[in-house]
Amino acid sequence: MKAKPLTKAEREWIHNLQNVLNECPSNRLGAYTIGDPCLSFYDSRFETQINNILSSGNIDFCSAVDELGADLGQLQMPFPVHSTAG
Image (cartoon, rainbow, N blue to C red; front, side):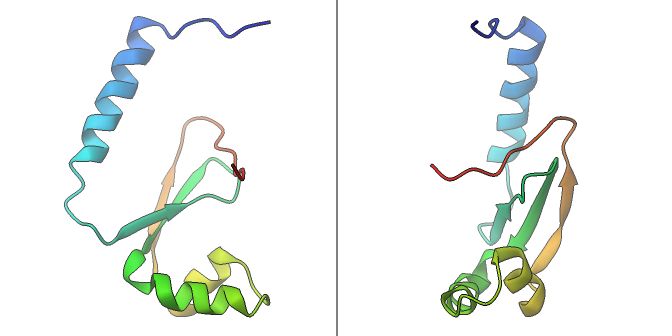
């Protein structure tokens, strides 16, 4: 079974979404998901500190973000968002 091609409306919506994302007014934003329909944003200027905490092996990424106060909010997606390793 193969997925049906995107509809015209779906293609336009994805195109518009990409255009909005390309207009990001800052280079400090980072994002992650834990596998729920929520995209979490964090201050990527904390990347080194986050990685140092992760190296300890005691907590995961989102906990490190919280511990450092680097959380910037969340975006609720209208569809599933999976967390995978590529």
